[in-house]
Image (cartoon, rainbow, N blue to C red):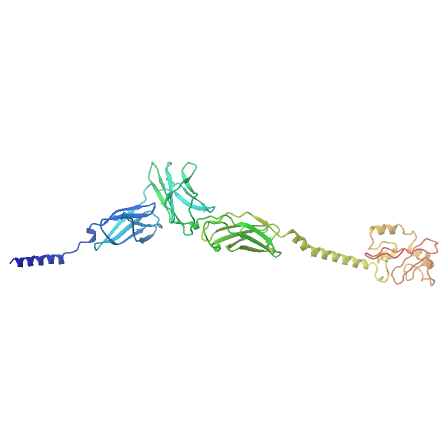
Length: 461
């Protein structure tokens, strides 16, 4: 009988165990405790009351940022997840999801940024300069109390979280910036993390945080160095060197803006952009150059907008000798042409006297005045001739020459005599105008030539 009772009891217990409904996980006690968020480090921490498995944590922000990571555990059995790329100052929901004893547990932490709206820092920016230094700046919020005291914290992948040491104060004594003179060893993968919070006796101050700053993108370079401009008679060759920079980058990651000014150019139309080279060279054709041209250059990282200051302006232009050399041809050509014209005009003074040396009188009206100056006469020659002009008319002169007249002359009124010339007379034949002079009653006269053509010597006296 006892055995039967034990069997019945066993069957009842077995039925109860098989047919009982399991309790939902939310009705059980979660093993997750002590969830906390360090907004400055963007780190969520918690602990467990018992062993768990299949754990993960997730963040969701109003900016549509979402990320899920696997927790890490410390030596004191604290679990943590970090979200370095998140922005928390607008709030966030953080979730830890674990499995414990076959049950799934999910716990949520809702974070809100405490403090008076509009009292936190605004307009934050940072800049690396002179290779080794960095400045960050911000402005007080529009609703910030007068006694607000801002604090800047920063960290990098290779530097621990730390507060600013050298604050920059505004006109009212409020902290509005920070100077860093120790940035550690530069590494191209450096990311900088910043957070500005504040304190006040009047109210809580909300903090301001950011996505990581890529260090290579916040460096403002020094201007390019060692600019030289040379001229090879066809181009001006402009060379310059890369500036010294903090991070190790290839040359083509630098971007240059060249400003070339000529007297006729405008600032908008003479900008040239080119990527870095080894070496940096720009060729400017001499045809595009003026006597007073100017060159300057600046540089930035290819993927930011932080231009360096302009380099010192370099003046250049075509050498002065090039302008004089360019004028030699026209000047020589003009001089040669003038000489040819002058020689042509002088030869017109005595057409047909190709075989007569030293005779030149003007045709036309000068033929009526045998002692008149020729077109080729110089002032000195005119004066010399005028001193010897006889007072009798030209026609009489021809008649009074007698046996000393010259054959072929047009000024004599009769045919030339057949006899030979006088003992002192000289003559030439074949010309248009032949003259002889002498003293009245003189048996013979010395032949005195008229003015010689330009470049032709006088007849022997």
